[in-house]
Length: 305
Length: 305
Image (tube, one colour):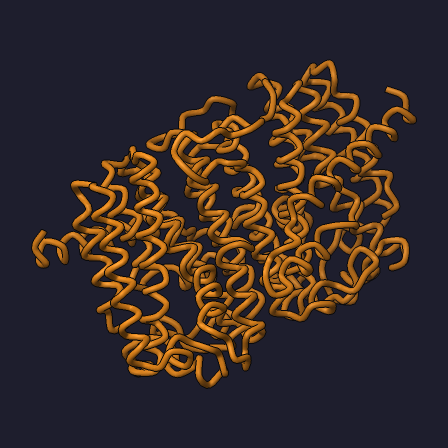
C-alpha cells in the first residue's frame, strides 16, 4: 500500500468515526451533561484506537458495522479516561486536545458524571437493540454473540486488570524510583491494554484463526507499549502547543517515564524495537490485508503529537 | 408465600450475592485499587437490586447462573455510583453504609478510579469468557445472546438517559423550586432506571412474553419511583445511625425531595399508591411465580433503612 493511499484511508475512516460519534454521543442528555460529554469526545484526538480497530477488522474481513461500533466504543473509553485523568484529584491538568479540560469548562462534578456516562455509552454503542424492548428484538449489523465478545474485551481492557489498574499504579508511583519492569507493567495496563483491545476487537469482527488471533495480540501488545514510550519521549521533546496537552508534566509531577528510566536515546531505540516486534507479529499472522496495521505501527512510532 | 419463607429466601439469596461479589471483586488489583473496590462493594447495602433481579428471573424460570451475574452487575453499578456520588465535588458525604465513604478512607483519586473500575467490572461480570481468548470460546452458564441483552439493558440504565442523567439533573436542581413532574423525571432516571433494569434483566434471563415484559417494566417503573419517595421520607424521619448514611442531607443541601414538594403525608400516600400500581402490574403479568416480586414491592415501601 502506498503512503498516499494509507493517508487517504486514514482521513476517510477518521471522518466516519467522527460522524458516528457525533450521532451517538447525545445532544439531549439532561442538565448540560450532553454538552460536557460531547465536549470531551468530539472534535479532538488522533483517533489512533479507532483506526486500529478498523484496520484489524479489515485485515480479517470483519463486519464493517460492528467494527465502526467497536472503534467508537474504544474511543469513548479513552475519552472518558482522559476526562477523569485531568481532574484535580488525579493529574490536575487544565489543557487537553488544545482546549480547556472538561472539568475546567464544566466543573468537576459534571466532568465526573460525563466520564461515567461516557463509559456506559461505550457499552451502549456495542449493544444496538441488544437489550431494549422485547426478547429476540433485531440487532442490526452486529450479531449478539459478537456484541458479547466486544463488551467482554472492552470491559477487561478498561477495568482493574487493564486501564484503571494501570492508573492506580501510576498514582502510587509518583516520586518513586520505578525500574523498567515495573514501568512496563504499569504501561501494559494503563495504555497497552486498551490499544491491544482495539486490535483484538477489530479482529473479533471477522474470522481470525487462533494463530492469527495470537499474532494480532502480540502486535497489539508491542504497539501498545511503543505508543507509551513515544508519549514519554514527546512529553520532553515537544511543546504543549504541538501536543495539545501540557508538555513536561510527567517530569513536573515526578512521574517515572521511559525517558527518566532509560534516557532519551535508549527510549527511542526501545520504541523502534517495539515497532519491529509489532511488524514481526504481523508477518507471523500471514494476513493478506495487514498493510494498514503495518503502516499504523510506523505511525505510532513516528508521530509528533 | 409466607413471610417467613420470603425472609428465608432473601437471606439465602443475599448470601449468594455476597459470595459471588466476594469472588468477583478483585483482591489482586494493583496499588490498593482492589482494596478500595472491595471496600466500596462488599459487606454493606440492602442488595435490593440483586433481589429484584433474582425474583424477576425466578418468576420467568430464568437461568440461575445468568441471573446471579446480572444481580451482581446491577449491584456493582449501584456501588460505583455511591462512591462517586459521595465525593467532595458531588454530594461531599463522609458516611456510607455505616462506614467512612471510600474517598475518606482511600483518598479522592483512588475513589474515582475504584468507581471507574467497578463500572467496568459490571460489564466484565456479564460477559464470562465472552471476549477473552480465541473466537468461539465457551461462555459458561450465560448464552452470548443473553450476555449482549444484559449489557445493553445495564448500559442504558447506567448512562446519560438513566442514572448518570438523573444525577446531572440532581446537581443542577440544587436550590431550585422543582415541581412534582420535574422531580419525577429526575428520579425516574437517577434511581428508577437501575431498579427497573434490575427487574428487566432478571426477566431477560428467562422467557417472558411481550405482555409479561411490559407488565414487569411497569412494575419496575412503579417500585423504582416508590423506592425514591421512601428514601426521601426516611431522610427526614430517620437517623444517620439507622440509615447508615447521613440523614437530613437533602434538606441541608437544599435539594428538592418528595417530602419538600408534596409534604410528608402526601409523600407517604404517594409511596402506597406506587406500591398498588406495582402490584396491579404484577397481577396483569399473570406470572405464576411472582410472589417474591410482590413481597419485594411491600418491602421497598415498608423498609426503615
